Amino acid sequence: MKTPNPIITVNETQGQKLNIAGGNYRIIISGKQTDGEYAVIEMSVPPGAGPNPHSHADFAETFYVLEGEVSFKSELGSYVAKKNSFINIPKGGIVHGFKNLSNETAKLLCTVTPAGLDGLFEEMAEYMEIASTDDESTKKEKVQTLFEKFGQTMYPENYLD
Image (cartoon, rainbow, N blue to C red; front, top):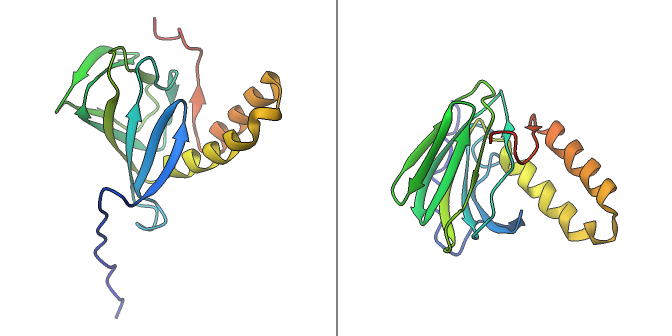
């Protein structure tokens, strides 16, 4: 008989904290803890920050806005998500991105199914800690390689404008 997976509890001080793209991210539940089924990431996004347009065909991504507001854009339109809003990015590779256009830090709860984005964030944070000695061309190449490794396609910042 298979042993059931344990119940996991995480308080506000636990989880893996990472500095990504100018924001503070906390991996609350990683894919390692869920056998790769999903990961949950808390994202603190400062004013003006957020990922450039990107796509990922092999996993779904959801966001719940805990604090503040962010502007989500996709190939299908745009939406200003305020506190208590929910955004679902389905599998299939829709190009999307978001920016915090307000003057306050926004806090989002992101779930990815299956897990994988958490691994990208871990490796990106590790690289950024040592990237200060790399020139811009090397940084861009390394980041692109990481995104490709995790099934992400990146687009220019103004791609959805």
